[in-house]
Image (spheres, rainbow, N blue to C red):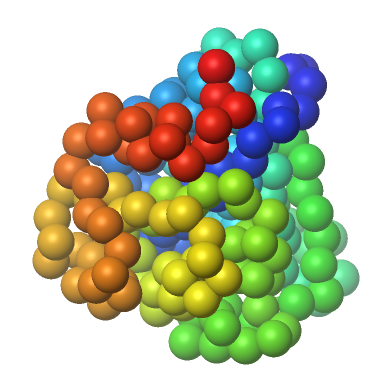
Length: 180
């Protein structure tokens, strides 16, 4: 397994839709850039980007997943879906909230945002919108990577929307100056 990198990029998005057309090329790009990938460790975009990242060639960088709490019984039976099978470093938390409660003090979204050097938001629901809002509140560099404005109309409108992977890479190189 590759060793940890100095830069950690958070990817946030739908917990139900994988959005392969966005998540797969993004995961491959992040692997090429030799950064750590940080997600919420679940399904949907989190699984798709983690799969693409871990299956792509890389010298450095690991896949980190911030896992919300679940009952011991659920986790033992594998019913909660966390962490997805591509997370190389799961960080288990006691934090239960997400979705509409994603900005609550007991939401792992704070860890996702604060532990990332820059954040790429893909389309998602209320949990993703809350992470976008937290990134803005904490002053974290963030962009939205989407194929359509309609898919991200619930996100803070001040966050730039990017339609092209080359623009995402340019954003990362500008906001994460330690990239090779």
